[in-house]
Amino acid sequence: MPDPEARVVVASTSAARGEAEDHTGPMIAAWLRERGLSCADPVVVPDGSPVEAALRDAMSEGVAVVLTTGGTGIASDDLTPEATAAVLDRELPGVVEAMRARGLEATPFAALSRGRAGVAGRTFIANLPGSPGGVRDGLGVLEPLMHHLLAQLGHLTDDDPHPPRGEDR
Image 1 (cartoon, rainbow, N blue to C red):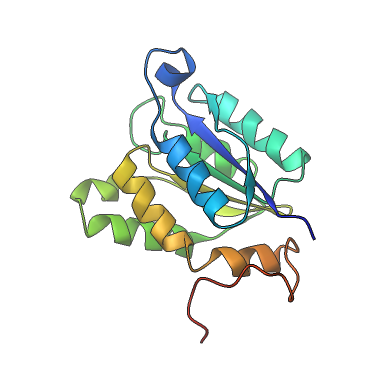
Image 2: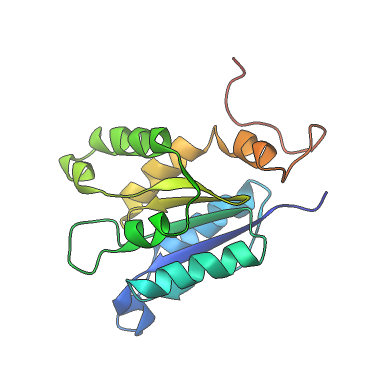
């Protein structure tokens, strides 16, 4: 079975305009590649409806994992959670709760994150904050879950060479 494909969507109007440089998208893409997923360079889109379009594009292309970064706060243009909710078939609130709990260990501002996670068809989607620390926290939560998520969604087989990262229970 070929390596599952992943995509990173950066929600940032200023980065999409070329007015700011995004640092979290490449961090996430590197993390995905280190775990054996095929991942192109991040897709940078403005906040709002372009995020939903990017998610739908990834789903239609059969991408196994989409991780977004940015647009999860409380500013008026932070609409990544709404774009994600529009495409999800099933939410995974425990994933988001774990990310928020991990973030709260470092900063009280993690309580303001409105990210979502869930499944759309055979695609796992999770919203990560736009800060490097928030991304590290979110990836730390996803680390032990990825293999099982991919297997449950039919992107890995039992004999796949990618070992689970979490402890067996």
